[in-house]
Image 1 (cartoon, rainbow, N blue to C red):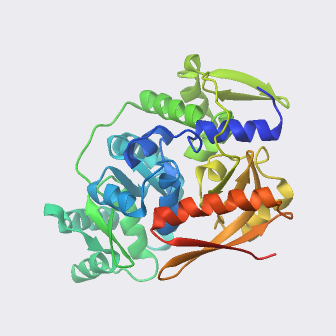
Image 2: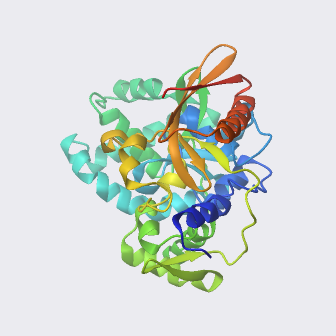
Length: 357
């Protein structure tokens, strides 16, 4: 493979199935990726939709409501979408490190083990028999049972119940997220889970490095290397600028279109610690201002990020404001119009594109 940054980015677009997506439903998308970021519920649904041509936002909502794909705190303790069949072994693998990471905050909030376990049991009990309750409803229930939820205590008790695989986020009720009980499910031994997660990661995101895998999954480097060791016979390696990259051995066809509008938090950006293969370092602040953890939607051309965009929802349209890093050519504007049209169709709205520069 050509080791230029553009070639690496193009290959990643294919590995992530942004190009040539073969999926039948959102659960297959999540299963292919292992897990994908889900912080911004309204926008990250497009991460599933763009990999599922012909789907609509309503289709993704129904998949989440039906539990085909689930949204919960998983890798690194942040919100991810995970396929139903994978949620127990993935969350179970990373939970010990996530809980250890949250330990200092638990102590600051005076959330001891007894309080966390009691609150988790109460939350799970309130969600039995198919109940879907909002955060406010669950916190009111905890308060009624003598557990103080002020400050961030309530959030961290819900977080703990999620990491313990008792609850996941369910259907939206208006603008409010609901929670629902998670039925028991199969786990994997740690070595098998590490190998399975490594296989999903390197196949769906290659070419990439073991350091990227450790960062994405929130694993120690030793565990990441162990997972890679047990799956590398199904991968190929290549040296790019002195680093070893791993990927699937399959041949990547040329992309059917050169330009894509990706949502904020998309795995094309967030799936890697080192993003230099797809993003010039000088623009890192443009996609995540001040390193604040909020990643803007990106314009990707030929495997490289060339700008950001912002969507504003209106009654009958979605306005898409472009912030390119350089002047766009006429052909690029046409390509953006086509990509915006696909996003608008996903939302069921007409797309209106404007340049902010």
